[in-house]
Length: 398
Image (cartoon, rainbow, N blue to C red; front, side, top):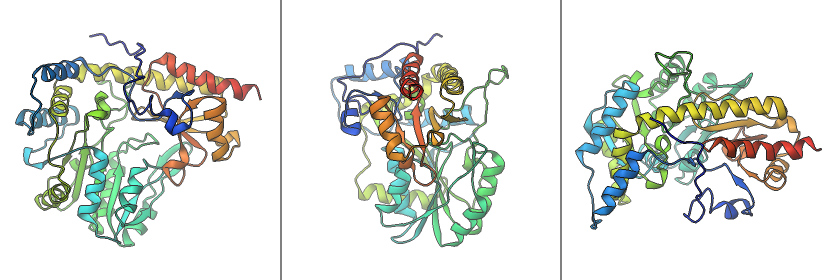
C-alpha cells in the first residue's frame, strides 16, 4: 500500500491547537508550528471510514464500550508487543494525561511523595503538584548525548517515602527506549520500597525501524514494563492509539491494570469525577485504528526515520551548534542548543522572532531542559526543511 506523507494538509480553521492556537501560545500567527505532539498527516483510511460510517447514522446517543473494541486492543498488544492482556485488566480513560492524574489521586495520599524523572512532559509534574502530593525529582543523566536513569539517586528517592513513580517509556522528550536491563533494575528498586508505577507507554508503537534487518525491520525494541513484572509488582500501564495513528483529538485511552484492588481504586476516582462515558466517534476510531492501521503505521515509521535522519544530517552540515539527541522512539526530537550560548529567554526569542519556528522550550520539561528545544517532525519533509532553513539563515548571518 502507498501512503502520501509528503502531502500538505491545511489545518487552519479546524480549531487546531497546533495551527489555530499558535497566536495565543507564541504571541503571533506568523510562525511555523512544530510544537504540539500531533501529526500533520491524514489518519489511516480505516479510521476515516469508520468515523464516516458512524456519522451516517443520525443518532449520536449515549454509548458503551463494546467487546469488539477491547478485543482490538488485546489483539494489537499481543501482535505488536507480545503482551497477553486479559479483558478484565482494561480500564478505559479519557486520555493518558487523565490517567496520570487519576493514578496519583488513587495511589498517593495528600503530602505523600511521587517520583518523576525530568526532563519530562510537563503534566508529569502537574499531576503531582495540583493534587497536593510531594514532588520528588530523579533527573535523568546525560552521557555523551545518551540519557540514562540515575539508579543510585532513584534508590535515595524511593527511600524518601515515595509512594509512586510516574515513568515515561519511551521517554518524552529525550527519545530513549529503555532496555530490558534498565527496566529490571528499575523494578528491583520499586519492589524494595513497595512503590506503585504508572508507566506511560503512549509512544510504544513509535519505535524507529532499521531496514538493515529486513526480516524484522525494527531498530530498538520497546519492552513493556509490565511484561517483566511479578505478581507482587504494582504497575499500571497507560496506552492509546492517539499518538500512533494521529487521533489524539478524539480523546480515548486505556489503562492495563492486572491488580484487582488497583482497578477498584482507579474506578473509584473516575466515578467520583463522573468520567465513565465516552462518545461513539472515539470508540469507532479506537477500534478501527487497531484493526486497520498497521500498514499505515509501518509506512509512517519509515517516513519518520527518514525525517529524523534528514534533520540530523542538516544540523551537522548547516547548524553544527545545534546537536540532535539521537532518538530511539517518538516523533519528538530533543535539540541541544547550548552551544549557541543563549539564555533560555534568548533562545525562545530567537526561534520565535528571528527564525519564526514554534518549538517547545526545553525549560518547560523541568531540570535538565535548560538550553534545549523540542521539535515535532511528524510533518511533510518540505515543512521540516523549511523550518531548518528558517533556523539556519539568521544563525549563519550573524
